[in-house]
Length: 113
Length: 115
Image (cartoon, rainbow over all chains, first blue to last red):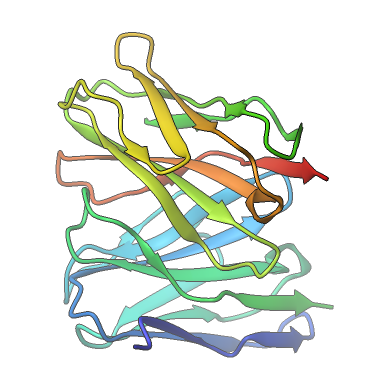
């Protein structure tokens, strides 16, 4: 029972490099989310996709792009990584966007040097 | 914009004692949902409890219960008979039913249960 799967779990980048965080869920959920977690800041919403074919900005979208590839997959791309993007990133999904439980992946620790 | 505030960055409690974590939120919506999530050192986010705003009865899940005060926009979590395994970060979260689909989190409270 995989739930929400994120890859990679750890990544070290140099400033200016690009990378994509992959997320897939096998629960047939409509809504998917990307958060970043920083000490003292809690979880901040980067982008979300209420349903397949739609994406919207969250609280901190600058420097990121997303793609809802299909109902299962929602990727987060850093085009030109900056040290300020060093963080732990979580993907989450919900079957009843706006009311149901959020199911989270295990998180991806990204370090930008 | 909706906001969620957790004013206690860190707390500690003796094993078997009771502790209450505070959460306040701001919204102009009448219908919404509130959650408490637990994040142990493993980093995995785990749902502890969920409250629907239109339900006046406070939610309970075993040793975990909430005190939901809609007028005061307050949603505190009470942990009874604290156990060492309750040591974790606890996040309060909010989502409304207006169709925004956003889940907003507080900054978290780090709880340490002492033996």
